[in-house]
Length: 204
Image (cartoon, rainbow, N blue to C red; front, side, top):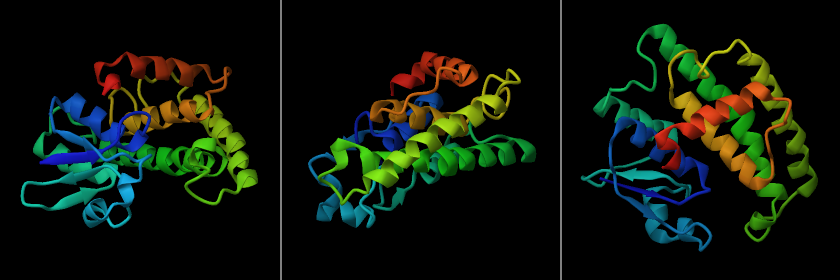
């Protein structure tokens, strides 16, 4: 099997790489060259008609897209350490937090990137006013997250590192790249980010 992805700072391929690093699993990755339009090539569109990365291609030619779907596939194949929770409550909390990160944080970061960043100006027609409006959204959701983890929990769902932490880490690191930094007053988020950055998998 092999992964089709892209190097830093692309957050979604990195999400899978971090997941695999935490599992101790190695899968060769082929970088398709997003900036060169590799995601729009006929070969890649045959793997994923939406033209996105990452894509996992199995040995029989089956392809799996979407980061959480790919990570769930590897969770079943390599259940230790568990990164989607074990008990019903743990799994529900992981799902809740992953969805919160994706919908409340990743989406506005992506909209800022698409509509307000100069790197993407040649890729689509930008609505800069809309793009810039997401700056405040991203800041506010980080302040909300700061309040949520003010109880001292080491990870988003409690005492265990999960896919929810990976989703938030990759999103916030990418947000930094785009110019959306974590507010200084979000001290709990900043401390959490330091803990995530200290993990060996952070370099994936």
